[in-house]
Image (cartoon, rainbow over all chains, first blue to last red):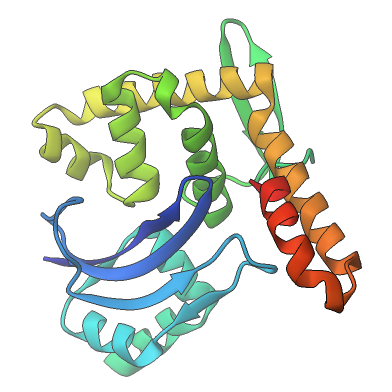
Length: 87
Length: 136
């Protein structure tokens, strides 16, 4: 099963998170299938960038977001769009 | 709310032998603020934890794995992961409550950002290395 999850990049004490699509069984060694966004808490206003088209595409193929990613998607209206697309 | 705490966390308080932190809203454990805060604590004090505690917390907060996935990764029970994480988090809170390193780092970072705004554009290159040291 594919999952959409946050993964931390960046240096020690300088966090930067990517939102990736990855095989659920690949813990930290596995390479992500796709990168669909990022979150930079260091920058002012902690911007979140999401590739909506890619995310909707992967979710349509069955990728499951983690709780954290789900809340990000919900805050950006992507979960609502996904629910709409399924109707 | 004190500097360095994620949104919603009011204070770290001592309850008996255990340290706990108060979250206003329920279900904030995996909020972005909490993940970043715990990741910062792990950066500061991770070396003081046991290897198992550090790895479990790292996979949970930095790789966004579930308890079940971590348990599968280490071939241990979900309960063992939960216990390792609970003890590890308590340790992190204890260290932060005593040393305030993460809090101080956040305050330094904010001070550096404020200073950066005050620096004249023609002296920005000169000030950049100093500001980087201050924000580290």
